[in-house]
Structure formats: C-alpha cells, structure tokens
Length: 137
Image (cartoon, rainbow, N blue to C red; front, side, top):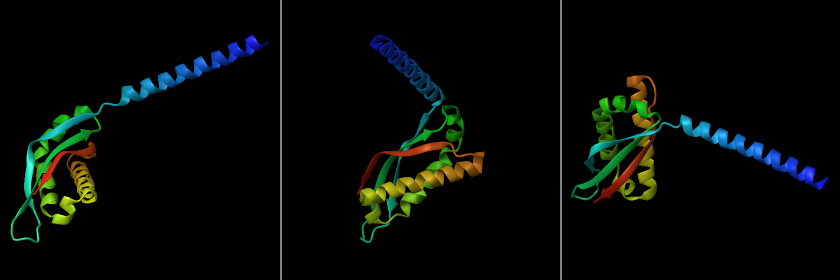
C-alpha cells in the first residue's frame, strides 16, 4: 500500500514538474527583448548655483520590449537623445549628485521617451531605460 501511494505521489510530482517546465519554456519563448545603446555618450551641463558650470556624462541603453523594433528606435534616436539632454540640462545640482535624484531622472527619461515613441509610432517601445555610466562634476 505504501508503495502504491509513493508511486502516485512520484507520478503527480513528475507531471507537475513537466507542466512547470512547459510554462517556463513558454515564457522564455515570448521574451524577445532587445537593447539599443545611444552612441556617443551624452554630455551636457546642468543647473548649478556655483559660478562654474557643472556637467554630467551619461551612457544610455534602451531595453526594448521587442528586438524587432530596433530599426524604429534607431530612426528616432536623435529625438530620444535630444529629449534626454533636455531633461538632464534642467536638473539641479543636488538631484544630479544624489542616488535618489539619479533614479528620478532615469524614471523621468524613461517615461518621456516612451511618451514620445507612443506619439511617433503609436506604441511605447521601451521596457526600461538604463544608465550604464553616470559621471558628474
């Protein structure tokens, strides 16, 4: 009797395990993320209360929802770049130099870029916007 119960439990676990594996394969099959890096790096001035200009240097990578949309993003790269430069240039020094401020800036860039792409191509194409290098002075 114990052997029969043991075999039933083993069979149920194997069935559930293969169902989980099939579900995971389905998730992986639908992930078609792509990445597009804005080149060259963005270098711009920011608002500084001091008499000398401050600058920020940022490398930006766009994580795209679908790798097949890279050509559309590449076509609109000058607009994306100009938008990010404008956002960075409007930031105060305290925000540029703090970690929480950097995250706010990144989120603002992400939301604005997606809004622009929605306006231009009819849908948001960016899944995430990453600052891969962030230097300031």
